[in-house]
Structure formats: C-alpha cells, structure tokens
Image 1 (cartoon, rainbow, N blue to C red):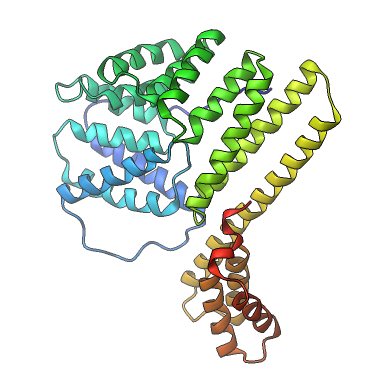
Image 2: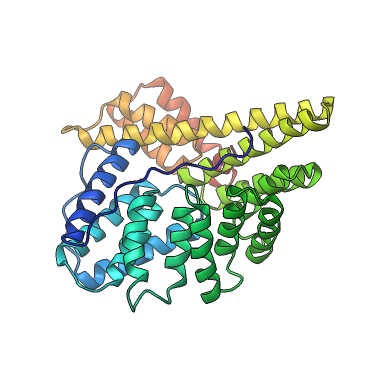
Length: 368
C-alpha cells in the first residue's frame, strides 16, 4: 500500500512511585538495544561523571540537535552520549518536574512513544509544563499513530502556544490523514511546507504523500522529486553519517511508489518506466553506500575489541571501505599502516596510489 505511517511500539505507563527508577531501567534497555543495532561491542572509556547541571545542559544540546535533523535516525555516538547524560540525571534523582520533559523528549527521539507519553503527560500536568508547546507537540506525535483524535487535541494546545510552527502543522496534517480527512490533511501539509520554507526533507516528503493521497499526481511527482533533491543536499552537507543516507533511501522509496501508483491510476508510459528504473538504480547505489557505513562500524568495533594491534588484513578492509566512502585521508592512513606491516602488500600499494590521485574535494562521499 502506498501511504502507510510507521507504527511505534507502546509500553505500559509507569506509576508515579519510583518513576525515575522505571525510566532508568527503560533507558538501559533502550540504549543496550541501540548499541546492539549499531554493532558496538565495547563500552566507551570511563570518564568523570558530569554534574546534574552539566548533564541537563549536554542532554538538551543533543536533543536539540537531533530535532534539528527532523526525521533522521539518531547516530550511535548521539545515543551513547545521551545515555551517559540521562544516567547521570537519573542518579541525581531530582524532583524538578522538567526532568520528565527531558526524559520524554529523549524517549520520543528514540521512537519510544509509550514511554514518552507517560513522562510528558506528567510534565504538562505540572505548573512548569502547562505552557511548554514542544511537550504538547511531542505528545501529539506520540499519539498520532494509534489515537489521532487525541493527537489533534495535543496539537491544538501546542499551536495555541506556538502558532505557525511547521512541526505542529505537519502533525495536524498526519492526524487528519489518520482519521480519513484527506483534504484537510493536504491543506495542513501545504501550510507545514510553507512554514518550513524548504529547510527540511520531512515536510516536503509528507506533502508529496498527501498530494498522492488526493490523487493530484503531477503535484505529487514534482514534490517527491523535490524531497529527493533536498535529501541529496542534506547528504552532501553531512556525508559521514548514516541518517542522511537513510533519509535519502526513504525519499527514493516514496518517489518510486508515487510513480508506480500514478501509472496504475492514469496509465503507464515508456518515460515513467524509464524514470522508475533510474530511481531504483540510484536507490540501490545509496543502499550500497549505507552498507559500507555498517561495514566500517563492524571493522572499527573489531579493532577496538582486539587486545592486540589489528592485522594487515583487517586494516586493509577498513581502508578499502573508507576509500569507497570517500573518506580518503583515513583510508590512506590505514593503507600506510598496512605497508609498514607488509611492505610488499600489492592491494595496499594500489589503493594508496589511487588515493593520491583523488583530491578530497572530488571524493564521491556525497553521492549515493
């Protein structure tokens, strides 16, 4: 089916007694699972525990940065750092109600809607939280998949505190779509995209979906292409992270699905078949580069895990993966280490010669 929203798991709402213990346990499970997904096999080096004030400041900075990337999966470094700071906050066992706000935002950033709802509902019922628009918006985002009418109430409260905020307008659009009010969903999708003024991928992509839902195919096609182009721009600005690559894959998926649905509704043409084929090929290239990111993570973990220096074979594989990602300086360093161990290593010599002919500016890291 063309237009489906992501279903987030729900967890039971914790009771008030011992709530920080419950939250800490949930975060422990969450961060362990995140490390497993990213292939992290060794804990970070021990550092001096931050104070409560430092932990709140740093956790807030991370959450603000994650939200500025709007819709991208958090990186493992962000997850590790956030884990450190929220653990420090929990150990302080503060009574400040805004701690619920911090934890709720962190749960939402990790896709834990049920836990986000529990903590943020408690926060907005406090004196400190009743005028915090972002808490209401995140609650709306957490309710929208399963309880869209409840989400609309939260978005209304958020909008009263922060009019014309694109994240709220987008949420309202999703809620109207979930209850079957497609015309209203499109109306608010247009408002969200206009308010965001092309700054992020997500409003553009959602608008393309809503055009498709309303069978406005030329607009859906044109807007989905714009979403791909925005995702490519985002990748060029930050080629070392997985998140922009994942976002680009999602936009290719959306564009391909819209074109296929359009062909079903209005008839296929040679031009449309050619375009779908081209976008499928480009998506496959993005998927291949994403696999290289995963390979680098695995090899880095292997080098950290070993109690001895990495072998020449391991360094060679690491260097090749770095080179194919366009991270030429790191690739050359790895190849030089290989040659120190094995001066006659032919593949390392060949790769190093190739790397010397490619300037960093021409590295292909920004292309799928």
